[in-house]
Length: 498
Image 1 (spheres, rainbow, N blue to C red):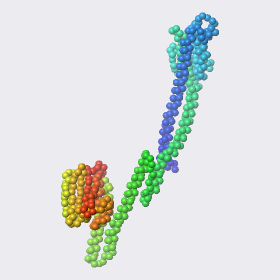
Image 2 (cartoon, helix red, strand yellow):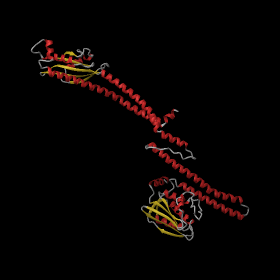
Image 3 (cartoon, one colour):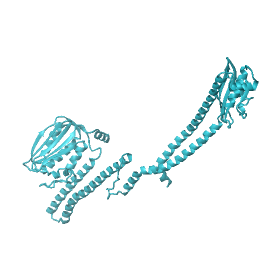
Image 4 (cartoon, rainbow, N blue to C red):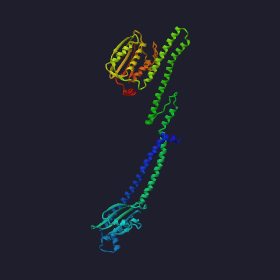
């Protein structure tokens, strides 16, 4: 049961879909995680930059003025004076700045004056940012604006993003503002969002797999119908077809299957008709032979007469079997032995052989000049069959003409007679196996396979046979062949005779 389930195209499609989706999810998860962390860091860096810009504005607007919040802070801290030192002004400026800024929990403002720790925006500083920290002391010595990051093994901190702003007063670095941010909180929030994304992806993937299972079943339903139709088809009922709708590979497969069934139905019908006709043709001589053998007496003359009749019927059966074998071989790739044939010489040979078939008014209409690639023996057999057929439907005073010509890259061989002609209703049917003209006044001696053999030989060369006939005026059979047979005919012939 499990092997059958996993062997179904529907299951294989689902498995491939699952593999592809799992691959894309596996690629997307670390990418999304990294993108979230990058966006968090970019946002923090923007906030650090805003903090520094705010400090620069305060420094520009109030450091040199004798009024304002910084001046009031100086008077409160150091008393009312006419002037204060730059260090005192910077200390007051830092106090005003720190009192105004409402930073986030993980953002810290730390100030230094003349390399000494001054103040910070919060007392709950991480260990790495405390006043006795070597890392913080190294940052205080920086003399150029710097932006950086410090990785910390402590998972509660993660990493520290910082921006350093040295304060240059009258060409001298008097102090440093350090804006630092601990990323653990933002990263924890990003991870929470990341978990939500993973949960949603898993839920969507599960739902997509369920929907894909039903969608695959819907898409592959014509295949199931094809299987059911194929199982219901038997030799006695080849009429079942698959309903087709729309376009695409499945619809094309259904159309191809229906076309194949049309060919099979035709082939089976032809086979049944062939068996029935062959059985009928064989039953008659067998009945004749049996009847004469059963009634044969002891009289030597009667025995000789019966023997001659039996041998004649056996010869007719042998010819019939030979014709059947020939028609069967016509569908095999080794049917033809191709060679270069001179059309003029072949035409003259055909005319010489035809004149020996019966006493008629034989005429050679024309001789084509050139060469063709064909099977000389098969081509001779086809033209002789047409000539033999003409003798059976003409009298001694009728004319039978034979000729050839080359026109537009094709060679034409024809046999024309002035006999009784063929009714229009019979002109297509007579090329079928065991078919004879229904209204013919003469009865053919064969089994009705001659014209079928001619058509098979012409088609095996990549050619055709045409009929022109009017009742009472005669018939013209024309074999039209290419000077060189199609490539597939040449390939089959060469491969079969290597």
